[in-house]
Amino acid sequence: MKTSEEILNILKDKFGDSIIELKSDKPIDSFVLAAPLEVDKICMFLRDNSDLQFDSLMNLSGVDDANGEKVKDNKGTETINGGTLSVWYHLESTKLKHKFTLKVSTERAKPEVTSVTEIWKCADWHEREAYDMYGIIFLNHPDLRRILMPYDWEHGYPLRKDYRNPEFYQGMKVPY
Amino acid sequence: MGILDKEFSEGNIVIAKTDDLFNWARLSSLWQVGFGLACCAIEMMATSASHYDFDRFGVIPRPSPRQSDIIIISGTVTLKMATRIKRLYEQMPDPKYVISMGSCANCGGPYWEHGYHVLKGVDRVIPVDVYVPGCPPRPEALLEGLMKLQEKVRNESMIKKSA
Image 1 (cartoon, rainbow over the protein chains, first blue to last red):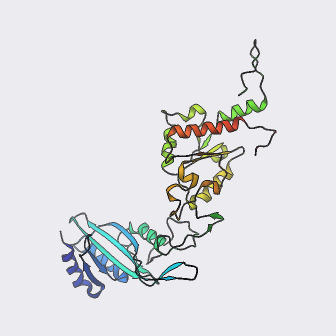
Image 2 (cartoon, rainbow over the protein chains, first blue to last red):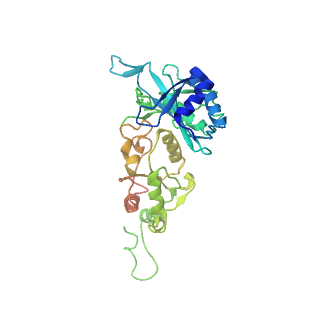
Image 3 (tube, helix red, strand yellow):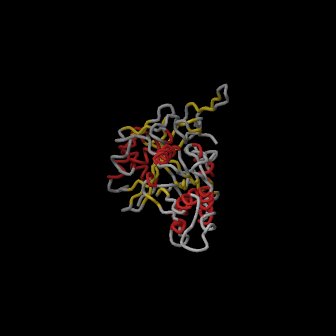
């Protein structure tokens, strides 16, 4: 059983700059911020290290941090430029009975994160959902298609804060 | 109704109009597409089960649209599902009827404003005969909706075109 601080130190020794910081000042479980393109290696280590043994990915979810610059065009449509999209990984070791939260932030303009499907198979559909809702690209994912929205949906990613619903989809009026 | 009120006083003969006879036969065996969408489908299944017994109205779930008379839209119609529902409806033979069950199928329900994935009313893709309000409607409400539909079928005519 290890605390987040102990896990942070193990990861710092192994990965150095890819592990950015531990945040424990929020009223939620403390979490570690990591580099988006190294997350597959970090997760492989978290799963296979004998002191950590995170064999279960409890949840993987995308978040729109909406921390970019809000721009209004002349029609009053608001879009967000810059800022980040995030992916959260909630891990549990069923053997060692400890939990760990990992977060990666990636640029909104080019949201790319390495996939962890090779490490935990259950990440497949979670990553497809994060892709579907936020447009986060998971590099090396075996089958990165939309999972909830129609496959031919061309109107963007609905859970982004600056998403606008289309007037029509396949001839059907969408707004109320 | 007019089936049994023109009975001869003696003998086993009943005289009725073909419209009345055929409508009586049709409204007494409205087979529904074996099809459910969301929580309303649970209520619909409860209506089919022994306590409420949809079968006493001649309603049985038929697992093929090609042999069904009605389709009960029991739940939230997503945009993705709407295209499939339209295809199911088109596969049904005439005469065919639609019961829209619950707020979601009627008008989008709780998803009316922020439901980016929800069709705001199934009547945007197929014509609806009876709207059953509720979220979800109780089995009694669905039964009343069915009886409203039976009333509609009863007053149809093979000669006169309905509106």
